[in-house]
Length: 227
Length: 305
Image 1 (cartoon, rainbow over the protein chains, first blue to last red):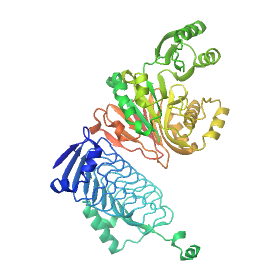
Image 2 (cartoon, helix red, strand yellow; image 1 turned 30 degrees about the vertical axis):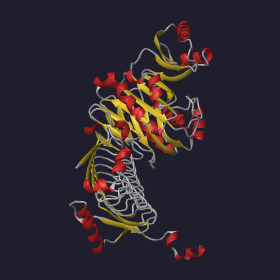
Image 3 (tube, chains in turn green, blue; image 1 turned 90 degrees about the vertical axis):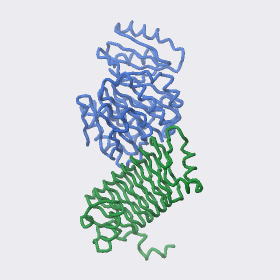
Image 4 (tube, rainbow over the protein chains, first blue to last red; image 1 turned 180 degrees about the horizontal axis):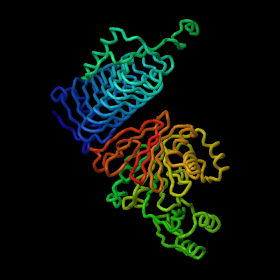
């Protein structure tokens, strides 16, 4: 395992090294120490490597990830795993706002709480939060799943497209066009699989499912003639 | 953008190190606000009257003469010292009388703060320059709040720099922008609150001064602010013995709080907290939107809305 101390080494050099496929072939495991809230740690990785970050990370940690498995042993700032394409991002602490924003694939696990706008405009990522999520989460979510083992804040799933939302605790309020939906076997199977992948032992039948009522303007075929 | 920081010591043993602990927090937020910076330090309490922090744009201003004149007028100047282009004076007199005298007799001098404990120091320039100018590192006290500014709503001037104070010992730093500040300023002026600038954040400070003058606690005043202030904000507020953090319901503007047995610290970003002692074992969390967090001297209690 290669250890990289951010307290006395450059972040830019680290991110460059994490894009060096030749180096990564011989050093597939990295440990980053003293992140001290720095922004843009381990962004845009393209290789199947593992990265452990020992401490709290700043904004956009593990953004645009492809294939890599990134674990943060602490909290993360705004926009963790934003626009992730594939791979795994695992936050052991809390995530600030816009966790997993616009992400198109992969799995984001937050063991603590995620704040406002978790999964905003999600486009295929799966997000599992062990704690609570803040307001305006999954806003305009297009596809993928958002699983919340705790409570959800105001306006959950506002203007939702086809993302699936599962919440075990209380939902403060649902956003425009978001409704509670029947939990069928296919949904229980999907949820069980995600909980298992996140290593969370809890009963899937205790969750409620939320989705789009498909009543907003953009869902009406009558409006197609406007274009 | 702007960056804000605050450090409230629960353990008095650390008070001699307030400046040394706080300076790196302020400088860590330079990226968020490189055009001006400021801070309020609470300490060196003076109970016999009022402690004033006065500033002059003239680097060679004759503070000794002003101090002598004040002593002649009131006969009550207990002590004073100069710090760069600022002087801190302690007078065993009423705040209003001294401030009126200053308007008449020293109109070119700016009152940065008035109270029993507060000293506000601020100016244009990089946070590291402002901190060095006033020797922040050597300051002692119980709590401090600071701001690094990237101006949006008013000019890059000393007057537009934070913290803003509109009443005894109360001051505020703000990350965000308010949209209803003009109308609110007019309303507060009619209630007798005076303003020195067109800045939106000064209106927030004036609002809190007004509510607390009506007898509200810091916690109540901040709950009222959540109803009456429109816009984006993360505020950190200092009073003589209190410290508070509040974010608007949309919570676009960041904040993180760290708490140990020794202190409560807040910053726009965790980066600013990374060098504090014991931070690895601290409870670190993001304050929730529209929730008021207050710590006050009597038992360092937490009041949440």
